[in-house]
Image 1: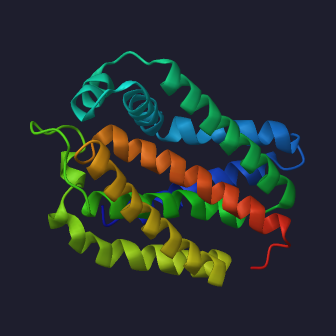
Image 2: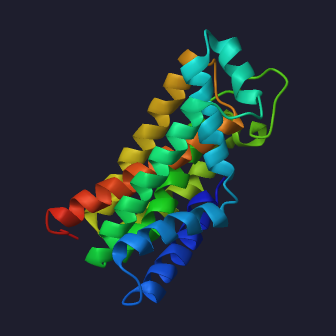
Length: 221
């Protein structure tokens, strides 16, 4: 977990690299779709699977126990499919706009910040299923020491890429991680591996959207 933001920077580098290679060869709209698909390929769609399962559970569960049962089902429902489609559309649209503006810095930093937010969520959560699961090792207060390594990585990367805006974004995604921990503790009694994946996908999309907004107001970094 201490290296989550660093892994995010690596993924962001691959994303920005694809954008650089495609500039002038493809329209930004097509490039945005390819970049969204590139991220899915690099992460093996693991986090999108978590997003689909989590939204299915929240949308169809009568209570926490029923929601966790739905989330464990390998089938994907209408809620999950809709969530995946909307997130991919949002990412593709944002990446197209960023590509058009040449804002590769946002592409580089978005996977980094989303993974730092994921580390915060895991450190301040408990696992929802008594029997444990795939995400157990990423959850619990015993992991909080990792923030002393992951936070400086995110802060330095944010400052280099986006200046004060980047440092502020680190604070915002950390707050989103804490907010998400409180929400899922109330709704599900904690988090699961699916919840972690869902949080990462949504946070990454929000960072891209915020970056596009920043570009639209003049790219003040």
